[in-house]
Image (cartoon, rainbow, N blue to C red; front, side):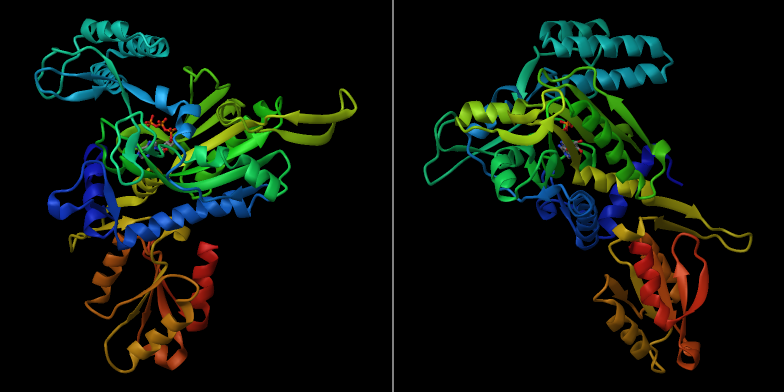
Length: 489
Ligand code: ATP
């Protein structure tokens, strides 16, 4: 059985073996922190994306979606602060040449101290780190590393360089001529999807006749030149985000922040994932413009880590774009302010942002679903790997198996396929013993299998087998489609 430390490795292997995730360009030995989704993975990822999209846009009348381009005018990233501030402090070990994100290096050391029972000392060190990071005090951080004797995991030495800032944006050139950095044809691969929403704020508000409070949602690729890019799809250089910016009247941001903090956790719980796997992490260190911010953390096999951020960003982004573009980012609110008896009038809306990584959510769903079960009896050793995926996210919803390849059973099974395939994803298989076929479906998380046998031809019933309980019952053929639809609805 996998314990937490090797469960992560087991999930990575499972993802590869069953067509969920492959290393990018694997035949050339892969590309660090870049991954491809296979035939099962792309379905699961799409289902997660659709579930988010639907719960944001379809279930909220005041939230609409957009699909902005990855390339944006370079000034966007000046205005957003990414050109100047989207940095991580890094430190290199001179002996191993290994580069570390300073916060990760110190946090890893704190984890080790906690394991050694030095809990208070570890906490104290982390508090000091937060303070120093907040002040960008790099000399202080280097001293902290020295004081605690933190060494490189490869060389084992504490022969460190000074701490430097490293910008995480990928740059490329527009047009045929290569340009030096700083010249006009430099463009960036967006490091977040949010700015595509901010620059379209007026377009959407006016053409959609949107009334504050309203939201704009978007899913799409983002790119960050992460230095410490290990941990499988947890931290990638190319990844996908699902973000929503909610525009509110200034003064109401506190209550909307609370609302979205709660609503986003409820979304996670609606997938049937237990509440104890989650916790909030309220930020102490806030960006200078931020009013409040928190992360929703999940208990991954690698520990509690951020999966989603909820940020109260004030008017910072729209204000910045107004400054840089010289276009008014205002909204006219004709609701009556009870304090004055007059309309609220013109203002730059405040923003609450919800930002979740699709790939990280994928890893979360996998971590929750992956189970190795010992099914041995005194007579026979047995085990299975099952993905207990929420039915609505499963890549395949229903597998249809004729017991044998003859006696007209495949034809009956084909008719069931014909009836169901336009409603949800089905899978047909007639090879191998039924038990083996069930196991293969367990491994990719298919919630329902039906077997067509000789009795089916007599009374039009099939055996339906439930993935999680492995229980079986006979139901009429005419009920199959509804059973599945009910579970995924
Ligand atoms: P971290 O502290 O883990 O680097 P962050 O605080 O920089 O993340 P945000 O900028 O708030 O992350 O991005 C919102 C969400 O996007 C994160 O909660 C995470 O789910 C996802 N995300 C961010 N960076 C990556 C990455 N490199 N790979 C995969 N997902 C990511």
